[in-house]
Image 1 (cartoon, rainbow, N blue to C red):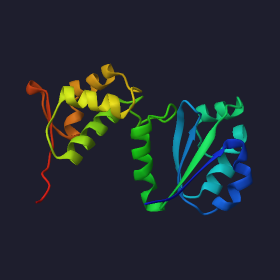
Image 2 (cartoon, rainbow, N blue to C red):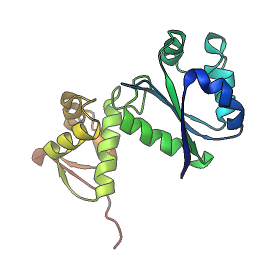
Image 3 (cartoon, rainbow, N blue to C red):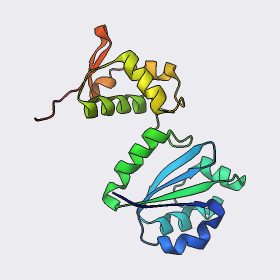
Length: 185
């Protein structure tokens, strides 16, 4: 799935961008202390030459928050992870779910209770075992290295809008999460 990974300073991107023509994968903008953004690209060259390297004059959709950080001259680095085109969306979703980048929306557990619930469902379904709410809360707190407050995880487990049941089975009276389907033996 992942063939190669390459990390460089953002200001060095123009020097290597030609070598990324036609290359697909995900890119991760980060500083030493924060993952800022995870994105996917069918062609890194196209994404960066029509987007991030143009700054404010970019016509393509790029993260406004990231453009601001680039303009401020933050010490940003970019990790390019080469991934087959068909797998970029899945790899991007997993990376966002794990890294909790500050500027991604939607799938990011930092911004979305539903993102936390998706992750809970994935863990339960992948493990094919029951989890207590307390066990899941502790697991997610460590999984995200404390980036997501336990209060937010508790909100997701409370399942007020019944969204959690879309991702895994729940027994609220016993505070249990269970897989929806059993794996064939």
